[in-house]
Length: 496
Image (cartoon, rainbow, N blue to C red; front, side, top):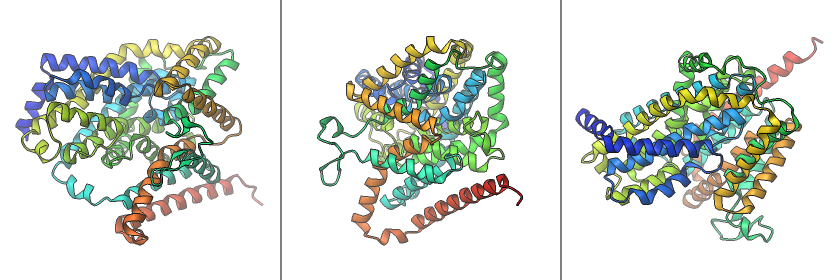
């Protein structure tokens, strides 16, 4: 195994493979910063260029783009409050408030270092899981996948600032939005109102951009000030402080990385779920949960630490069984066919050097993007000092282009504007936006696995051990959140 690891490393750092990795890093950085384009779109466009490459050259090219896109998406989330990637939406919750407080440099530094540490955690997870992953993955069927998505929805009670009722209402609304389109079981249109554009459902990218970007842009348009209200940590010292924060709160990064890798292993769940589970867990275990959503470093690190860890986790079922753990890894799986390699046991025996090369790429690409971004953090953070009325038109054009580029359709632009209006109303009347987004993300997954569970097992799936275990976890989360809300209400009440 050591020989295979060294062989993979030497092939990755060869001049041609390294140059392909650098090209992939540049593409991933640009795509990640621009809202709406998305890593899967970039990977799909890059696939034709992989013909004629060796397996390791192909994965240097594609995987570097995949991991860097995830990392770079956090920069836009921090600076403008607009997620560059759907998997960076949780970074907005505490990263953008830090930028408003003049700590954009510190926030970006912490995000980059936490992403790098998460990549290392994901890589270690791949190595350790190679001999034991098969029985674990095979123990999960549709009922277990369904319950895992419900656990993600349960964290809404933690992410709703003490109001479980509002959180559940918004989650329900998100699930209803996810049901729009063709029923996958009966092929009957649902909630389409006669519009052909709704037959494919509502674009999650357009919803993310509008829900989080709309309120920020409107706030900038109406204000006469910049995003940041201070300049305390936008210098080099702020950057290094962000690096230090990642190690000061190493336990938060470690737990977020393990959650990201664990959720990433489950095929079809994706990083949008992992980030909120990691964020909700960090809030539950924090000594200062009241700071979450207002610029908490723990919240930022939890949202950032799982990013590349879940990418590493998603590679595990793809390498072992040919089951992609996310949309991006599904495209990478296509590259396996192009280069003539079949995922499965062969990846753990005769192609073990290729497997280790993929692991090395996820780590080296993050190290390179960290080194590239360090000199850019200061000029990037200065954007937060630009006058809001000057910056708003540029951001408006950016979000419109991002929404349109999803399917090259004006329909997605209208969806984005509608989501922006909802985001503004949520901010105005203090309703949580995250549960709505999480409901949209998980709605389709919940429906699919519930249908499969009932079709295969009837109602007997409720008695499966892992299902019962997830149910106990959900009950504990609701109990703890309810108890904290009751204690908070009691403390705020009058002595009488």
